Image 1 (tube, helix red, strand yellow):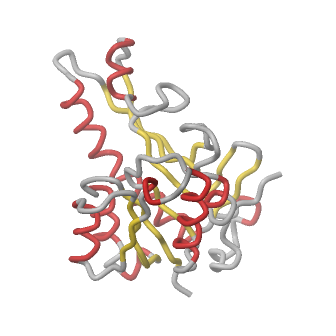
Image 2 (tube, one colour):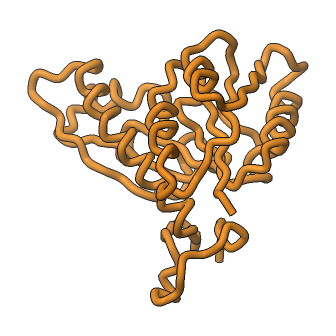
Image 3 (cartoon, one colour):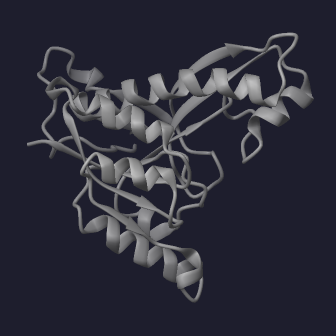
Length: 219
């Protein structure tokens, strides 16, 4: 059974494009079954449409409040029966209805827990760090507080500004996101407290888990 992904976007969709390119290979082990957005007319939706992937838009402004938006978004996502939701530059905090129904993975342009929030690259430069990077993590109810799956460091150069540093981080971010989502699809994952393990470390000789076995196991 093919592992099913719903990808959420808010802008240009460069992380989405990396995933669209990756899922063309059968060996990747996953399929993007829909792309959702919180805004109309964005390049991320156009990328999905060019690839023949179904799309939907749920704008916060079309609902009486964030709770109603969250419920509607959860309903739209559930229509596609995903095994995993990928927040790929989705600039909205997901609510309990979405987070309670399906695992969500996100990327962040810093080495969490350092520099959470929308201005991570700017904050890292202002602090004067010599190394920053990117994090792939599971999403919880906080702002960039979910369990870390993988991280990769990016050195800060003497002549870096926010734009140049962010562009180098984005290159690493796209590669790491594709790698981790692919492994989650093929191998499954478990979560014990805040430790995420890909595959089944307690049974190293076993074959990769089926779609039904994949998911979060919190102890």
